[in-house]
Length: 389
Image (cartoon, rainbow, N blue to C red; front, side):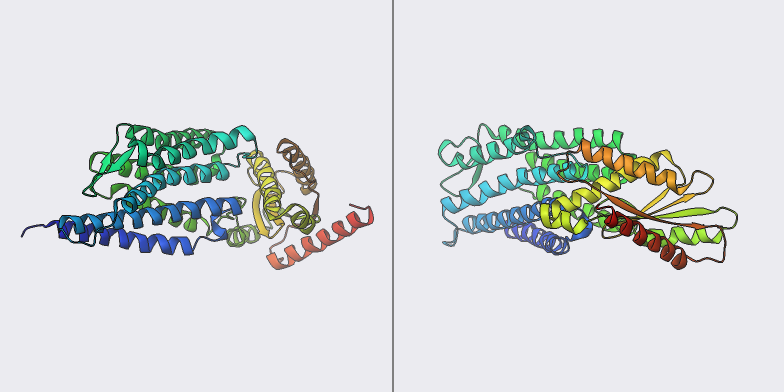
C-alpha cells in the first residue's frame, strides 16, 4: 500500500484536530482549581496559544497539499507568511506563559520593574524579528511556490524559546530547594517542560511533523490532569489541605481523642470584604496566600500541626496536646503573618480572629467541636469590634 502526500496531510491535520478538541476541553474547564486569578490567566494563555498554533499548522498543511496538487485553491503568500509567523510566535508564547505560571505558583513578586522587563523582553524581541522577516527573511520566508523556508537567523528564534526554558529550569530548582510541600507540583511542571523540549527539538530536525504541537499539548493536558487530581485534597489558592482532606483527618483524630487529646483552632480574616472592595480581589488572594504561607512555615516546625483552608477566608488547625497548647500556636500565627506581610510589602494590614475548642473525649464529634470553636471565634471578633479593630 502506497502512502501518498494526501494521506500524510490527512493524518497530520486529523491528529492536530483531535489534540485541539482535547485542548479546547481543557481550556473550557480551567477554573478556580488551577490557582489564583493570575495563574488561571497564564494557564489559559498557554491553552489559547497552543490552539492557535494548531490552527496555523493545519491551515499550512492543507494549503501545502493544494499547492502540491496544483489546484487554484491555495492561499496567497502574504496569508501564508502571517500563518507561519503566528505559528512561530505561539511557540515562544507557550514557554513564556508556562514561565509566568511557574513564577506565580512560586509566589515570586512580579511587581518590580526589572522583573517585568526581564519577563517580557525575549517575547517582544522574538515577535519583532519574526514579523520583520517579511522584509529581511532573517527568521523565515515563503517561496513563490508557497513553501516555508528557514532563514539564516532562525536560531535566534530558538534562543528566545530556550531562554524561557532555561529560566523555568532555574526557578523550578530554586523553588524545589525552598518549598518541600510543593515538590509534587514541581515534578509535574518538569515533566511538562521535558515533553515540550523533546517535541520542539524533534521538530527542529523533522520540520514536516507536528512534534512541537503534539508534545506541548500532551504536556498541557498532563499538567491539567495532575492539578485536578491534586485538587481533590488541596486548596488550589493556598496549597493547604481542603475540607475533603480535613474530613478524613478528623476521622482519625476523633477516634483516638481520649488517648491523644488535641485542640482545634479556627482562624478568620478580619474585614476581608473591605480588603477585596478597597484593593481588589487579587490583593484578597494575596492576603490568603500570605496567611497560608505563614501557616506552612509554622507547620514545618510542628509535626502534629494539621492545617486546612476551611472555606473563604477561614482556616482550621488541629494540634496534638502532646506538642503544645493552642494559645502558643495563635501567638506564632499572628507573629508570622505580621512578618510575612512586612516582607511582601502588602498595602494593607492583616488582622485575624481566633476560636478554639479542646477535644479529650471520644464522645465529642467534629460538628460539636467546630461549633464550639466557631462560637469562640465569634466572641473574639466581637471583642475586636469593641476595641475598634
